[in-house]
Image 1 (cartoon, rainbow, N blue to C red):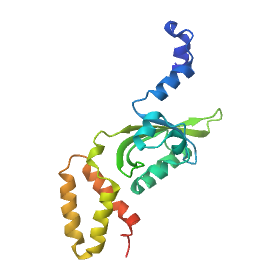
Image 2 (image 1 turned 180 degrees about the vertical axis):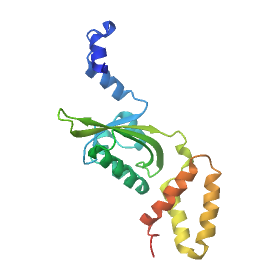
Image 3 (image 1 turned 90 degrees about the horizontal axis):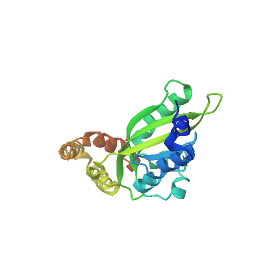
Image 4 (image 1 turned 60 degrees about the vertical axis):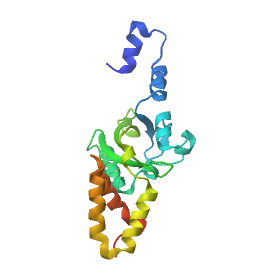
Length: 195
């Protein structure tokens, strides 16, 4: 039985519409929630999601999920979206890192389910984002730029510097090693890639 039918049939829910319940869930969510268009634009992001990312609802609605996703997570997320559109997956869950408005990083778990029309065609996605409470362990982007510039100007010390930085991050807490990979993957955006 669907949630909508349960609301309609439950004796204590008389006079309450499924829309009222959905609205309450949306505005008092624990996880950030948003509809997302097939082109990746946010549609009616929840207050929690807006607050976590540091944008107003209207600002976030002018952006796509790629605008707030760290570069190294974009390919995996795009591949999963395509797999859902192709019918290869019903939904997906992934760990990813968002870039907040203040340029700090926010690790989170993303769960995405498609919303289909009566012909079974995907028309939207419902994204649920659960922030990793350990996001205080991840340094802001300006600190990453300092490290990237140090490595770029000291190429002869590249390997020792990366080794030292990796050890320092690993000692910061569990989950930080994934962040190190994200940092290394992001160096390309700071002009450190290929040649």
